[in-house]
Length: 124
Image (tube, rainbow, N blue to C red):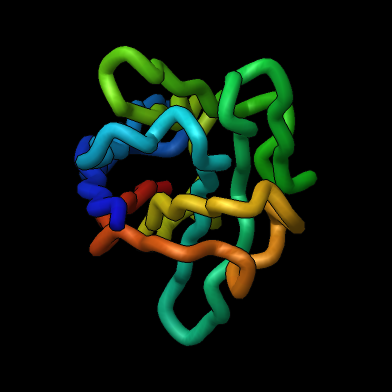
């Protein structure tokens, strides 16, 4: 069992930056692939970024590539999402998730555990 808690969301102007954190409980954090997803009002939850257990391989949605950076610190049981050059269309609730099987990391149905989400609002 893994419990995930996101933090770091808030209100920022377009062009600004935020860093989200996802703190995980348990001693098995280092064995999970981790991902960030987001959900805007009236839209489905969509993939943002993912990182394998070692942190050596990362994946990004085209919409955030070059602006967002995913990383993890297995000694701290924490994953991060550095978001730069934010746009109003990045406004959403951001969720972190853990995947035991390292399968299709862009597919939300393959993740086993989810956090409660943190709101990110980008004003124009």
